[in-house]
Image (cartoon, rainbow, N blue to C red; front, side, top):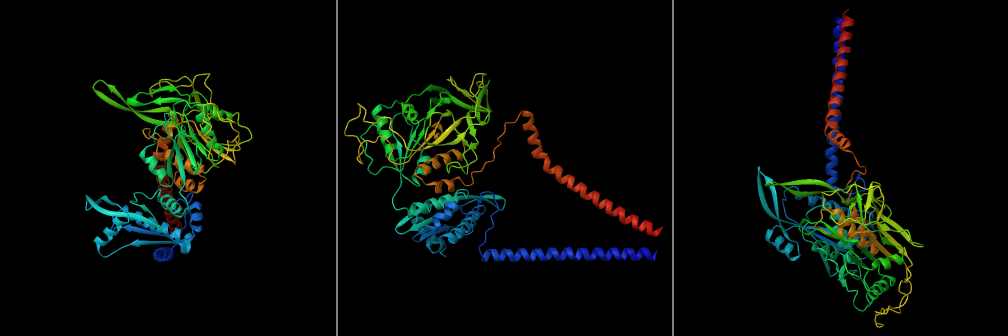
Length: 545
């Protein structure tokens, strides 16, 4: 019996020492975390382990900040005692500006403006262009409404750029970097957009985004050509009318003179008015110009099993039922170029009613495929009714994918019209020199097989707008902005087509796998404790015997 008592005393002593060591370790960890938190408030240090470093300035932002020659000052106007999540915006902005200061050095400063008098703060914020915003939040178990300011003003020499309201932190780095770049550039960059020829005007949201970094001009291909002060980019978006030889020649001269150009073209005009989905053929004559350089659009649409679901309404007696259906004419493109700054940081783009791009005749040029459909895609050439309820199942003779749907072409271009066509007045050669038989320098062209990418009546998410704006930046040789804008656009879609059985399996695995793992870990821990207790009990039993 004394032997049992001594064994029990020994085990109790060991258990006490073990608990004391655990308590000491936990106490030491708590003290360390408190000290680390205090140090973090006094010193700035960021350890970003996220993929793509989405919480740290991108390489493009660092490069722009390091190149600053004169001071840029950021004044931040945030109301006191902002509720959550709005207070998080202020903290995130402060951390981001600290990072900017590390790279901008003496030529970058930031201040958070605060006055004891609320009226003085409000008056200055309004004068600087920061807009008041109504904030809704929950406090004391009820909704409350409060007016506040959450904005920033960037100053450089006698120029000013304003972020009137910071509504989200996702694109905040782009908002800051693009405005800094706009402030320090010596001359405004110009983006020209083709007017007329059946083109539809861009939405106000898209135009506002383009105008953030560019001066927008409208180009009329029917007027005499003058390349004095030529734009940095030209956008041709969805023309529906035929181009005369003279108009194509004017356009070609503009490209040969060194204006990078993007063609967003359709082989069929899609009418979606009043819920009707019909397609009619489009012929503009531009296929002749692009074909001279080896590019073209295949007749018909590229359909893909990997596509966007849409909601449609159906009447069943007195009831209207909303159905979610798969629509192969809205292919989701996940096979994107990892070399081009246009798509390098993107995971997907949705190209509605897109036609495949033909590149078989491209010679002696640098060709890059930006976007390609999946291997489970196919082409339909004779579609007129595009009803979401139609049967789009591929027929045995339908060409199968993958298909290129967006490409870039760079290099020296020869002229289709080596001399002015007969319908072109001789007074129209460019003022910068004689008629060009080939490009002066390296030309840059983008061809996308749809213009519907800018149609905001088609639900596509933010990726389509990002793709379009990245195209504008690439044309203007401004890859920095494209890289910053695309940051955080990771969507992680499934790149494999799953059967109904596989989809169900993945869904239930996502729901049940984590609880099962936790239960299994708890059961394993319970079994270990049970075995330990049994071994201790066995020791005492054997000692007593």
